Amino acid sequence: MNLDALNEELAAAEADAAALAVNKLATFQPYGWQGKLIEMGATKRERMACAANRVGKTEVGAHEVAIHATGKYPADWQGRRFSGPIIAWVAGDTSLSTRDVPQLKLMGPPGAHGTGAIPKADILGTKPSRNVPDGLDYVMVRHVSGDISYIYFKSFDQGRERWQGTAIHVLWCDEEPPPDIYAEGLTRIATTKGIALLTLTPLKGRTELVDRFLMSDDPDRGVVHATIDDALHISPEERERIVRGYRPFERAARARGEPLLGEGRVFTTPEEIIACDPFTVPTMWKRIGGMDFGIGHPAGFVELAHDTSTDIAYLTKAFRIADQTPFVHCEVLKGWKTPVWAWPHDGAARDKGSGEALASIYARHGLTIRPERSQFEDGSISFEAGITEMEMRFESGRLRVFRQHSDWFEEYRHLHRTKGEVVKVRDDLLSATRTALMSLRYAKLPTPSTRPNLPTHGGTFGAGGYDPLGEFRSRPEGGGYNPLS
Image 1 (tube, rainbow, N blue to C red):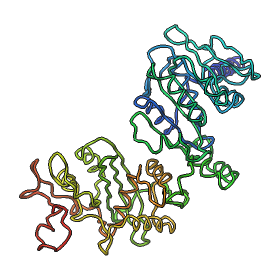
Image 2 (cartoon, one colour; image 1 turned 180 degrees about the vertical axis):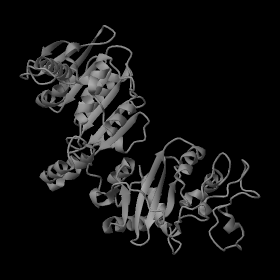
Image 3 (cartoon, rainbow, N blue to C red; image 1 turned 120 degrees about the horizontal axis):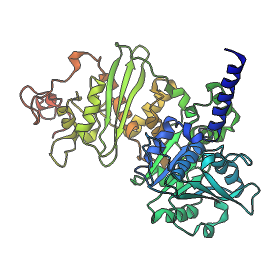
Image 4 (cartoon, one colour; image 1 turned 90 degrees about the vertical axis):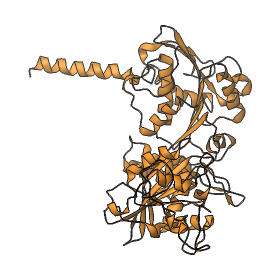
């Protein structure tokens, strides 16, 4: 290649880099948890990213606001879409922090506006703030329709009165607002059927606003968690150094996005002791599934692989789902090829529609179900004993969890006690884990002989059909627990 051609190639590369610098929106690729937060916007009016520091929570908030403002929705966009230009409010704790964090992510630094999430070509004008040097009151953004979107910058310390006013489409709070401020923000999106997005690190603990998301099953609200391990732009060595730099009492919030819970967390073993990288499970290890049926709450299912030589159980699979039938559950679970399933005491409850025991329904749909409810060797089903068994295994390293199961770890972080009692909310996968552990002694090798002899008809158990409860039908009265009695 001659010198002129090389110079032309370098100039073209520099031009491409310069073009990308003022159009970051074109190359935005969300991490897994960021994508989940975006997709949640399609069905949730209110969303919260309860996240560690430096994991990209402000980055995803800025890019979503920029996409709504420009109308430049990617082809694979699964989140909320607005059909025209929007009005958005973007806010932080103070006017200074709003300027230094969300405004910076949206606009780029002073003197270089257009190097943030909003493309330079789409910035039509700005109005400077009268109170904050280099701060903005609002920015006008070109929408693909030819109209103009407006993004206003606000702060929580302005007070509730300054949050009264016009209707808006998008509210983005970067960090946690006071309840009265947030309530005013929700009022602003009511008439437009807009959305509220919160991106925060829960340094204030279990506040009213955090509980609004963590302790509610309102279908209009959703929460996504992210730990420092989700910060893929930071090397593992750097993540470890960052965590060491936090004060001990801050590490849970700053590194794992965990608020202080009630009187205290149920499980306190550090996640780094529990989590392990996925691996191919040896064929000689026995396996057992655990169920939480989801009566009035999501259903949870897990599979444990048991290394009997070390007595270490590995949680290799996890599945949580709401508002679906046992048939749908089983269509997923049959693909796991789990040789046997343990079920909790409420599996003897009758389905309101069919009158059939829940455990029987899952067997009829193709799962190999234990013939009796999950229980300890002495026949007890103590909830607290199950919690203790889990904690002892966590502490000793005898219960490990594949680290990709973020829903399981979310439940692990937030299970807590109030007035001495465990708050049994959002514990579906943990309950399934406890159920499997109580019956771990019945785990089986995943061989063809352990697969169910499925019924050939659509009814309940009959001739030639697999009956997981048949053992109890043949016992004399009083010979054992019969979930069909």
